[in-house]
Length: 181
Image 1: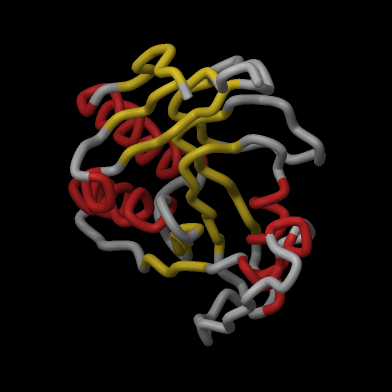
Image 2: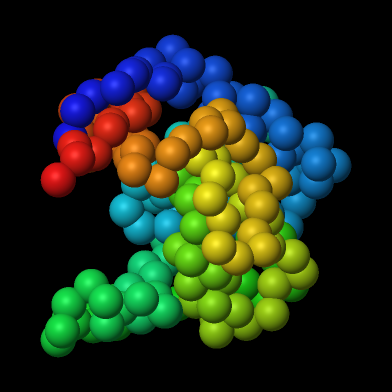
């Protein structure tokens, strides 16, 4: 992989997440009945950051849950001949709530579809919305984000890597070019 460019630095990420927090409040006419659900792995710390930003604005901390989509992936057999499937036992109430899924990068839409399946299995939410830090295009399913930090048109041979301080020791969104074989 060859680093092609730095798409977002720490300050750009903070601005994007703050904008997303404001848009969530505005679109939902407040924060009543909202739960943020981070998609493991990097969606979870992003959901916590958005919750803190909303708390700074509204004075109320939204519940933050997490969903592990491993059991719901439609490409599970492509990942390994004998995939390891683990049920993490995540159970939280979604019935009648506005669920906002949070993820780092929206690409084909398959991760989001799997997350929707996982959430709906827990009950019937009032609505499901999607917040992503980066939308890189190339959708394979009819899925769009309600809240986007940055739209980044990419080629299929490029990789968008989100680094998050909680997991990677820095905040950055990097664009890599895959090397030709």
